[in-house]
Length: 304
Image 1 (cartoon, helix red, strand yellow):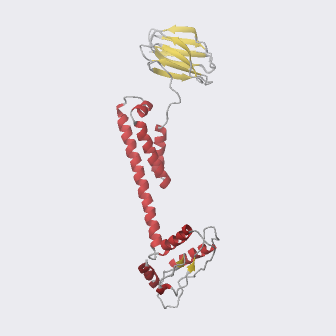
Image 2 (tube, one colour; image 1 turned 135 degrees about the vertical axis):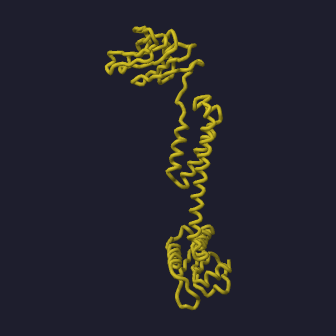
Image 3 (cartoon, helix red, strand yellow; image 1 turned 30 degrees about the horizontal axis):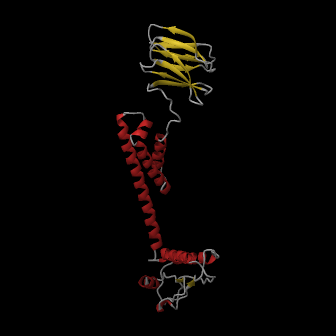
């Protein structure tokens, strides 16, 4: 430290500051010194601001050699009651960062900035790599997405990727990091609820216009029914049978009827909420879909 201080004095870049009762080396005792002995962070900030101003002025002026008669900086004398050691250390650290080596403060800031850029880039790269690994594992399509996350360990990978990109955004926000974060958040979505379908898969689902009912239709040869559910409780209200697998279910705009079509070549109309059959129409070929008019007065269907 003595060598660095001597070099700074030679170049006219030295700002002496004392933070305790220790005596400076003999060569420095004739220099005017800013006294921060006993200064505390709770004390007035003006002395510290004055010191920082003087340091900034010194860094903006050419170096002077001893004996030139020019003054490198003003000196501030600060006295106060007993202060905390941590505050003294912060003063000394600020002086070292700003003055040490002449331009050391600027170099330190540049190095710190570059380190942040590099770290953010590495975090983002890690997030992308994990996400690609996750999607590659799911490429087989053995199960639907949420089941893959829950059963195949994908959830942990996705969460890890998301945490990495969040940290990258915190350190160095960028458009690339934001895109990866948005894509990950979409993949993290999960179902609000799952309906118990007794092992048979549902081929289609419809929600009534008023949001009160759900209707699901089975596409399995083992189950040929439309199921009506209470949307609030997810309790099954009715089971509406067809003779073979279902193709579609559609609610009327007024919420009073449900139409279903099936590979049994029929289109059927059901009254809600009890599920009583109003009528059915049979065709020579399977009926694939149906639609109501806006006033719910008419029903049309399509068969192939």
